[in-house]
Image 1 (spheres, rainbow, N blue to C red):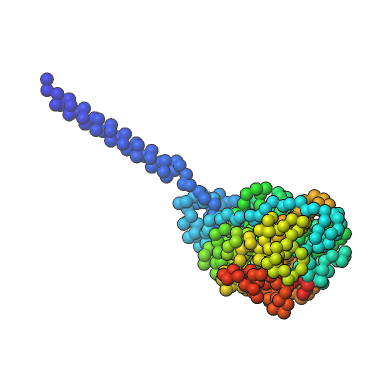
Image 2 (cartoon, rainbow, N blue to C red):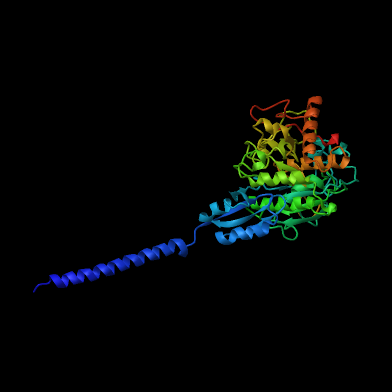
Length: 471
């Protein structure tokens, strides 16, 4: 039997079937890559041009064709929004005529510090029992008792509204004048602050605890505080959350209500990798720097902690528009014991904190560039006795540049309150505090510390010690 025609016909049919199956497989593959499985997304910050009149409308218009999901919108510190954008649409959003730049939403680290310790009932610079007035060493060291606010005389307040950007402030603490705040942890300023830890309350006591017969007294006693929540109970934050905080703070300066204006913002946080970016970050797509510049332009003094990694400054402490606080060790409230080991509450501090009296704190970050000399100052940052959430009968001992920053913020508040710094001119206030601290260090060389400009550590610039007694 001749099978060639049959085989020939069969081969032709199978060829058609195989071709059809291959085509179908190709179509399935194409469907899976183009319309079946969505492109991976990532969280981005989209900064819009200043000419954009309605950031929310523009965000919606850009999101629809790019399959992006808008998370929150900013309109004051920056014009822009954050969104989850598919990888294949980022270039489209960046190329939109309304877009200034697009950048990834970066992590922002909470301060790396030891857990607070409960303070014992006596304190080395006074010895009174708790409850009772605590004449804190750190306050005496920078002359708080000799400022125009005269911290510790049992009277007077400093009326300078200050935002503490942190994990919230205990709103019912009897020693703190908490007048408001907001929660930014969702990325959008919503309602009142949410207290998620003790750090913000610790910071607030250093800055502004009331001048009465209980607990500690802040550098700027009784100053009205606003808690801006940006950190969860544990873990870090991100740039978009800090943008929310700066946007909300700046909005108080730009609305029609002059009574809600925030004059100082205290930040204890940092980007672990980002350094300074010139021209307010526009060239380098640094949204955080741009927001800081806009807040400063609106009249807000930004004070930031230097960080606790024993390395160079990190953003926002790197920005020249920010007054940056490094830390020194002081355990007796007096100058002059350079590099001498001290103790506090009966414990050898070198063993607890690894630090010395009247010397740059071992953990403190420091300036490394010439520009850092223009905006960096120092303040006590170890053995800091301060408020803790709850009753004023129990106090915490804390350490870190997080607690140097509120001493600097409080000094600025006293300067503004006294009229020696002009309100609404944050860069002028920054320059005044740096210049004054440098001048006083030169006049009274005993006042400073090992590591200051008179006794420098090679390669490390900690700045001069602030002196609130001058204001």
